[in-house]
Image 1: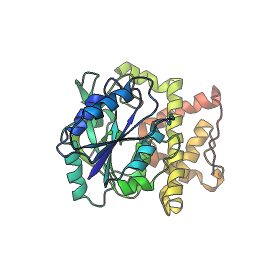
Image 2 (image 1 turned 120 degrees about the vertical axis):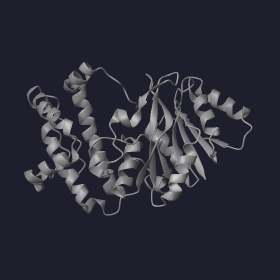
Image 3 (image 1 turned 90 degrees about the horizontal axis):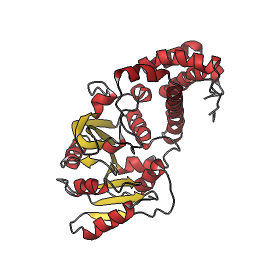
Image 4 (image 1 turned 90 degrees about the vertical axis):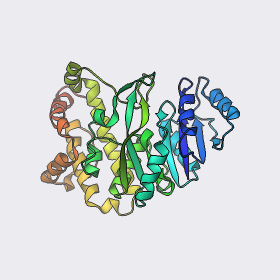
Amino acid sequence: MYDVIMATYNGEKYVVEQLDSIINQTIKPNTVIIRDDCSTDNTVKIINDYIKKYTGDVNFEILDSTKNLGYIKNFEALAKAARSEFVFFCDQDDVWINNKAETFLKRAEEKPNVNLLFSDARLVDDKLQNIGFLWENIKFDPTQELTLPRLFKKSIVTGATMLCRRDFLQSLIPFPENLPHDLWLSTCSTYEGSIDFCNDQLVKYRQHSNNQIGVKRSHFIKKIVTPFEPDKIKYRIAHYRNNYLTNESMATFLLGYSNSKEYHEIKSFLIFIGKIYNINFYKCAGKHSFTQSIKAYIKYNDKKNVLFNMIDLIYVHIFGIKKESVNED
């Protein structure tokens, strides 16, 4: 009924715990598909030894991994290899709650028009001690409607908590370059109205220094100061660049999206953002009125970023952060 796709890289410390949690699910997967992205530690040997010793009914498939692809393209290669109706994304260092698959599959059967499901997660430290909850940390409110403006403001879907229908997943390959796969899949499913979630915390989402994407806690004073640091400006620019890549990629993949209201609203929003950060997201800025851009800016921008954007405007235009162009229009 379902496959698990696991991307690994230097995961020798935790990968066995994750594999144990998968094979001990109340509903077991058809196949666990693993691709290692050229680890320099003992990850591959540990996985091979694990499979040799395993005597259960779950199939394991190891994909060729002679080239380092990065985590996005690693998951793309894995997604291509999936054959079951449902596909779970899996990080190497987390631990699944034993009824995760069962809970997701029941929800998917109840919602045949849903292509992507995600859940909350328990945040844990290296030793799997609870340190909080994912949705609480990212301030995700499950009572609010899932809309495209909401996802453009903040990425709220974490890959380690996702289930996709295989046909939907493979229709969105190749994944866009430099765009997180969970953001790509969640925005497309949101636009199509085929996204939903489970309220349960079904993953122990490990937080440690080696996380590529994770939740970090900080002290109150640091939270006040860090938004105004130069690195945070670059972080916000990267966020808006992801907005641009998402919008243009959706225009390529989704039939009719380039003529949609959403596409042109996001374009207006990014034109306004581009003036703040001195970045030419689009050549045709003159086709969008100032009023259109302001309305789109308010609709698609997180409220807390409005103040930061105005301060960033000073940094960029007075202190001279280098102008960059990402225009492909």
